[in-house]
Length: 344
Image (cartoon, rainbow, N blue to C red):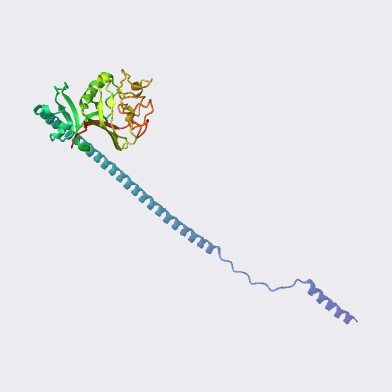
């Protein structure tokens, strides 16, 4: 019995030992960790590589800056060289213009001397620029016309245009520099004023004298853009002083747009001190000139010479309404006459 109990107790002890004791499971082999020294070596290599790349980039940037500075210096030197070259060219141009002006002055003197010689030897044959042209004087310039005893006309200095549209033109008015005021009185417009080589009015008495036979009028106009136009009129005449130098015009031809002078046909001449217009307003005072003011203007060739064209004050510029309208003052105007029967 005891033997049987011991035997049972043994099995119980074994059973308890099996279930109470923790099981023993198979375990994985432990991982081998890298040493800390190897990690430090790898990190240093990466730092050195980054430092090398940084150094290369810095070198490239320095090289780019150096090239940029060199290019900038080169550009500055080229600009300075161009400026120096431009100044040299301007100096040469100024010198050439001065020489050209001197040559023109010499030519003017020679023309005047030639004209004076002609008038002394053939005074009875000289009436105007067209008669000079017929005697083979073909250079444009200043000539001196002799007195006309039959007509009672004194000696007269004129500017002859021997080139335009066949030549033979006697210039009676010129506006180009703006240095001469055309806001003059009756006496000045009667006698004439200004410089025969610059801006001038030949004088109503002289224009009357030259237009006593059938005469043609040519008006040349230039704007500030360099465009040149003209208007011509057949049967131009200017009355005497008793008729207040009344304007008479025939047929119009030309390329200046609408005829802006026909409005002034058969109109007396007016100045600031002698109002002969057909208006309640004193047109000569408003338009600042002497002219054949009707009521008042479609053109005002003796108005104020405004620089670069634009003007708004009283519409008193050098105007031709049929071309640029009433608010544009022209750069240059010339009025010239010659006989209707002139043959170039």
